[in-house]
Amino acid sequence: MDGSAPSTEALDWAAADARRRRLDLRLVHVREQSRFTREATDYCAGTLEAARERVRALTNDVEVTTELLAGNVIESLVGESASADSVVLGSRGLGGFAGLVIGSVSMGVAGHASSPVVIVRGSGAQHGRVVVGDDGSPCAQVALAYAAEQARARGVPLQVTYAWQMPVTPSHAAGYSAVRASSCEQELRLAAERLSAWREKNPDIEIVDEQVVGHPAEALIKAAETADLVVVGSRGLGGFAAAVLGSVSRTVLHQAVCPVAVVRPRPRQA
Image 1 (cartoon, rainbow, N blue to C red):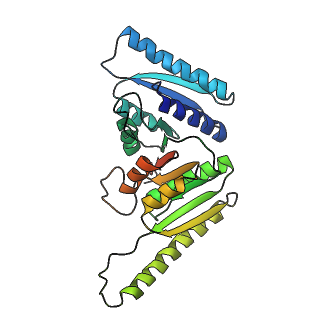
Image 2: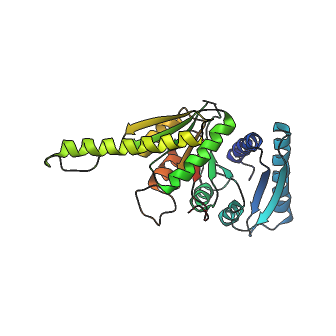
Image 3: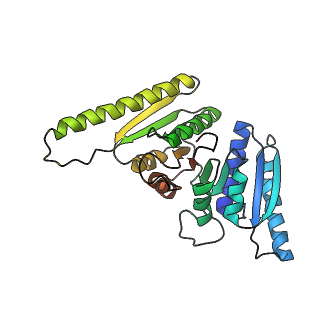
């Protein structure tokens, strides 16, 4: 919480999520080391108290605690994530440039937190579905688990989106069409098998699939137009293993019009 409009949107989202999933809610404000004046301390404390009162006005079913921390904002919130179910942030805060879609704090926490990070942006319109991207990677598996929990708590269907891109092969290569068709068939079959396993493990959730030919980020951004939440793994099968956020996750964070959850395996899940 920093008192900005985006952080208030995040507060409302977190309060509703905590109520649905029967979780406690911890409100954190981080005071940077350079701001140790009495006026700054009073402002920080007031920001937290106003946030607490807002949650109380929204719901009586959530236990709320507050914490005023001093230090680097990203490092502090990443530290909080180690013992959190989720970290929820607005798309951007009071600092930085107003024209940015995602602020540096939100992007930094999403790239390094241990827990899922939800970046809240959008009008708050309810469409009645949760969307998750699947590419068969370990990150996608934990993203699917988180998305299933969100769909269950909301009582809405879970849409699993799998986007398959055509392999880059010279157009004049012999047998190109046959190879492409065979590869496509195999990829779609594997995706269907993964989804079948998830249906068996989650019989209480309506799970639907969307298989498209195209870029995964584009498919998820399109799906976000009619989703309450889009869930992505921190990175997928492509790209560099050392990257904290893959290109798909980063693009979806910047362009999706609804809240986005970025999920990575915790150390014990890796």
